Amino acid sequence: MSRVEFISLIAMMFATIAFSIDAMLPALPEIGAALSADDINRAQLILTAFVFGMGVGTFFTGPLSDAFGRKPVIIAGASLYVVSAAVAWASSSLELLLFARVTMGLGAAGPRVVALAIVRDLYSGREMAKLMSIAMMIFTLVPAIAPMLGTVIIAFAGWRAIFIAFALFAITIVIWMGIRLPEPLAREDRRPFQLHLMIGAIREMFAHPTVRISIFVQTLCMAALFTMLTMVQPVYDVIFGRADSFPFWFGFVALMSGSASLINAAVVVKVGMRRMVTWSLASQILFSTAVLFLSNTSLPDTFQFGLFVAWQTSLFFMVGLTLGNLNAMAMEPMGHIAGMAASVIGAISTVLAAAIAAPIGLFFDGSLLPLTSGILTMIIAAYLLMLHMGRVETRLPAE
Image 1 (cartoon, rainbow, N blue to C red):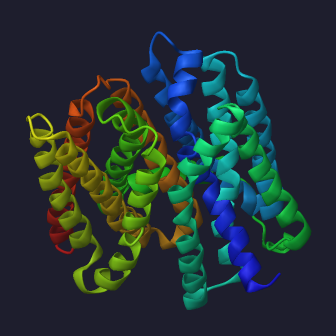
Image 2 (cartoon, rainbow, N blue to C red):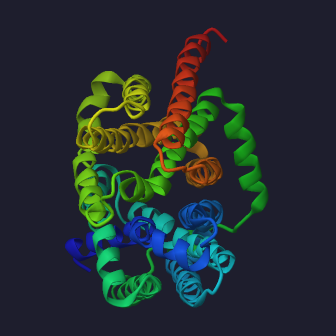
Image 3 (tube, rainbow, N blue to C red):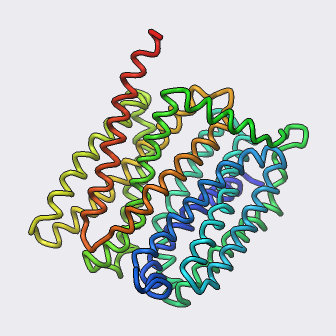
């Protein structure tokens, strides 16, 4: 497999999560009308149900791939994803669809998490960092085009056809990987799956103050992102009457905010990870507060819409400036259990973030108040935790 082909395959595995979430956004109104006509807001749970399942799957897919090999775990995860997509396609109730989305998330954790392990198996050092950067640049295009792709599928075949597209996407990954990629983890390098090691890792991580605070802040930042994702389509549709142009605006915002990782890479070495996160959160507090107050005024609709798009971009941008740094801060003291720590951090933050975002999304009432107040509360809490981290770090050497 050439390097270009390998990067393309890894980027496609990464894209499983973004495609599974963002392509669903245009379908939410039709799914709500078809399966939950008495409470259309419940359709938003389709997004957080998937994220919840993916978070739970993240606990196990990494260690399982260490024990049984990379390709078997990806194939098993993709198979569960395909079967769950078929169940979602045939669902006659929202409850069954939500169950299918949870199991889709469990399956999607396979390609998403194990892809990182495959890169680590085959590359190291600066070569690995370079390859990951290229793959992530390709990955950032997926949120930009997924809503438009979802809109096209709905227009031609209805909302159920989106789940067929999901299944075909996963099948393509499995066939491509199965034919072209040799198993990267040799049998002699495999480690047995041991649950007690995961429990021990959790205890050790939460006993370390910097790691503990980083996980909580990462959870709040992810919860703010998931809250925006669950409400963004109703905001464009109900509040601003722009449902038809929503995929294009979402793609524009995704492309604009995709530069955050490049800016972070250029600045974080000079500024430091903690300051970078703290300053990003402080800026978002100011922006979110302005939107909270200005959205309740009698300003022209065009101005209100432009303000919302700018705020949405700033939130996505903030996520790009914080999540990578927070993950690195949490991992730094955990080098001796790096693989296990990565799974635990990703799982805990994702599951808790989905649990926070899901109920907030149900409060959508045709105004921006639930969205702006919910996100502002999360960002303030995250900012206060970062200030506390700074105080903790000044005490650690003395202790």
